[in-house]
Length: 187
Ligand code: GRF
Image (cartoon, rainbow, N blue to C red; front, top):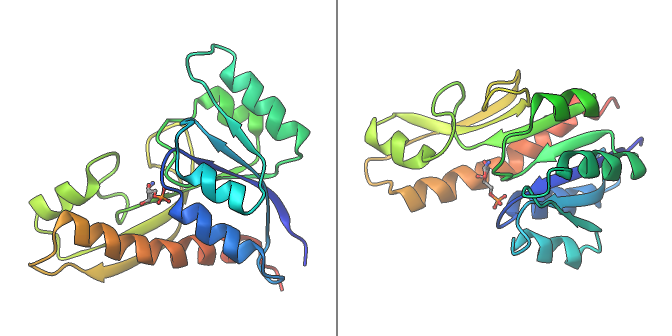
């Protein structure tokens, strides 16, 4: 099995990262997660990366050279795929073009509906019947790249923001890995 050298970008809890790391330990899963990059030095996901002994690199956006430094780190580690998992910053067009390889994101709605922030709040406000998550390629526009895979469920009247988040994230853990298998598992 050829495993793709990958880097996961995070900003927060890292529960998607955790699932990707668990799956990448399996022989059949086409990811070799070599690196975790965070723009938040206090992200809980960094503790998860540490548990799996994955090297971490912290980005400081205040440093004007942060994109160049990140690109160098990706190159040094021979990274062929970036997976965004709760990474809360937009990647610039220049960064995307210079990296020049696949960048994938997971978003907690059925795109193109509910791009950006406050997804769960807006889903409840507009009384959506169905919601879910989307795995998509990243381009320079927010949550707008080509869709790879979506998974959905029916919203119940009693669903609160917290409940929706729980249901969506449970689905995300399956969706992200299925999307990766769809893209790279040529067996
Ligand atoms: C996920 O719900 C993902 O869809 C969104 O940010 C959240 C990250 O959660 N982009 P976690 O850090 O993986 O727990």
